[in-house]
Length: 227
Image (cartoon, rainbow, N blue to C red; front, side):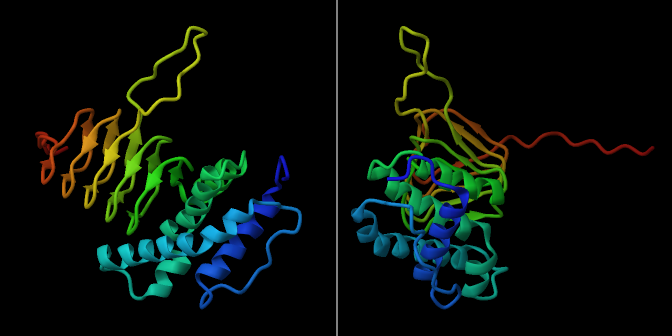
């Protein structure tokens, strides 16, 4: 296996996957010749494709501005980010070094959507707009979850070993099915957001939320003065 793949190889890998997942919209592209991946990765491509198709369906269901499926596939940052993430997550689970993180960082640099390849994300995942979304390594996201721009699923703090190095333990949120998080909200720590919950915009949340809840920020006082 190549220890340090080139950016060109990774982009060709993604183009190969796009041609398999969206054959009506992307031309077929061969796998990069020198990029040796586990045989089990090819076996996972049908499931990767299925999940990405559900992500496209989620955008169609949640965004009235969409005109057709092709618009989502060709122009929405979510689709580009999720092709990278879904492939990276499969490779991460197969124990492939470096490549998973490099793939998600390629998507991050283009879309502003930062998803760690180890994060677990269910089907029908929707990110609207996308810029500034951060999903940490140990986050767990259920099915039919919607995130808006600027949402952070992050860690509240870290634990350290005797040598002063941070310990890699579960430290990011769990979002159950049908959770919606509006723009610029931060959910931090190993907290659980119950299913069918709505988190309003600009919320700072560090505690569990029961299912079927609505979490809102208190409305600030707005004063308008004439010059």
